[in-house]
Amino acid sequence: MHAEILAIGTELTSGAKLDTNSQWLSLELAELGITVRAHVTMDDTLDDMITAMRQAAARSEVLLITGGLGPTLDDLTRDALAQLLGVELVLHEPSLEHVKSMFARRHRPMPERNVVQAMFPQGSEPLANPRGTAPGIFAVARDPQTGHVCKIAAMPGVPSEMKLMYHEQVVPRLDRSDEVIVRRRIHSFGMGESQVEELLGDLTARGRDPEVGITASDATITLRIIARGKTRELCAAKIESARQEIYRCLGSAVFGEEDDELEDAVLRMLRQQGQSLATVESGTGGLLSFRITSVPDYELSFAGGLIIPAGGVQSALIGIDPQRLEASTSNSAEAAIEMADGCRRKFGTDFAISITDWPKYNADNPAAAVPVGHVALAGDGVQKSEIIRHFGDPAIAKIRTVKAAMNLLRLHLLK
Image (cartoon, rainbow, N blue to C red; front, top):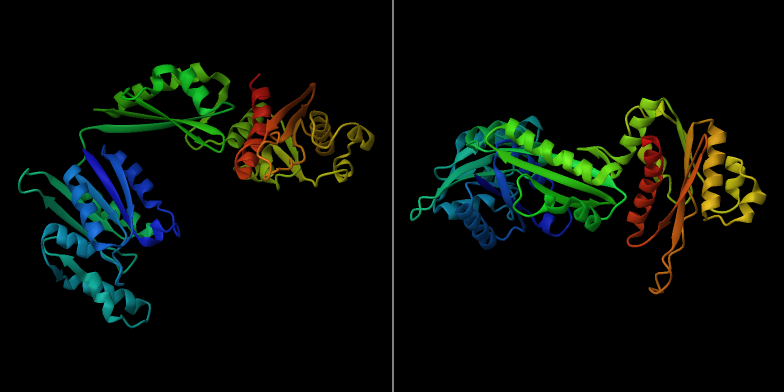
């Protein structure tokens, strides 16, 4: 069984708002065994909306629509649905009473224009919306020539209203597929997409069961496993087989699954080993300590972090010998190790990780050498550093650098 999702609103196509509804609905439909094969985002143009609805209804068994159910002149979802079904809009009195009651509860008069929210394509079903003034619409489109049937649900674009309506009103009206869909995400760091794909071999081949896809986000490579089958147990077995193969191929590059971030993995390992951490960073604006302190119970392992300016001031803040610092540069492997070691002594922790001064970009000279920075780890009997080459988007470069610093500690803890 296949579904398509249509998100309507000029605010979405203009970039003023992000369409998060379609992503959420895709995950929810997978729980019913329904595969989503298209997301369409479009503005409020009636003819285009009718065309998009007609095409989706002809291709799929389920069409979910969000947005365009308000009272303004550009809210055209109900009109498009009526024309798709070849019927008129008719007033539904109970829905009108609901809209009136919503205004009465707010002690506000209802504008006459809001009556349109109680208008529905003839033969369709209103979907109750206890959180807002816009009821949803449920209809069934039948192709008279092929007999193909598509169930259509139009819901408000407001996420809190849409989610409640989906669970309470739409799901009971949908047929569950005889297919089960199970998903798993596995995260790795330290390799690029092409290198990961090469190591995985035909595991990511198109048409393979289970399907394994590769996604890169902020230098983290995520393997998305999707298994389909008659039972959840069968899907789980397929997932586990692919999971074991991924771990075998990527080894220590794998750091977690599902919602895990690198900081989750590092702090979990520190807790398990009863060890502590401090950080010092220059030029990243505190991104390293921000990510660490976003992990629940971070204070069990994290003693604190320093955000220091570039240059010699850092020597006083973390107790670095100024002469030793001057012997190198503020952005070098030696400086990074000095920073980490000084931070560790200051906080009295088992480990400290550091990030050196942020390199300067020369946007006017594309041929200039790629700027570099350094991260380092200091601990009892361990001093390690790593060079970081800063290419691409500076914002992503900062996240990549912070992750590289955490990964240096993670790999040491693995030993």
